[in-house]
Length: 316
Image (cartoon, rainbow, N blue to C red; front, side, top):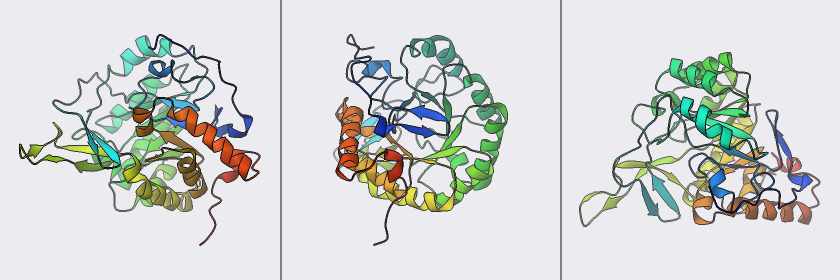
């Protein structure tokens, strides 16, 4: 945790307030899982209570994981590759030891969860449905870990089964995080809706790799990694737009958002909220800056609420 704590030093702007699946947020910007620690690490850079809409905590698995061996992060043109490998202490340890340290901040928390079987997804949902958690982000799409996530996220029937299994055991909002590494992401989103999911978040990272020409070896220890950052934004926007036309459940849009203008683009395409990840790696105050830039846009175009922007893309 940062030595400084900017708690309650910034006044939230009511124009940015949103309600996503019953989760009330002071603004529509969620700190993306895996890029923000569990939140307190950024307490010296942001007023977590008033500048951050919600925090999707570091990805959790049934048991603790050490993560992948070797180089885990590689910078690329306009982006970054990562193969962290879901390093985490495990769901039960998180609930018992980590969650109590987060409740001092009045900010909604989403439990980002991955698993290897449908039964494990259900167990994770039960384990993480505790006071202090505002919602579940079900990761059926993480491309960083062999056999966990990827097989679920590419098959609509399996995605529907996972969604149903999680929905059955929790009263919290169920948000399924979708992979872009599929043929038709709209069909996957429809499967979430059919399974009783409350919302979807998209896109997760695009599967990529980097090569060191001098050693003639992959740069990343896992060979492959997930690509994020501005390079993926056009793909993410297209997919959010397609999903928004295909389903009636709300969308969290993510993928390369670095500015308030980027965030507004996603909301015009149909996202009700956004997530910011890679931008935080570049600038730990990015979420606050993006919120301010969104406010400037709302004022410029005379919007009373950021909710009025959602889905308002006009035909060419």
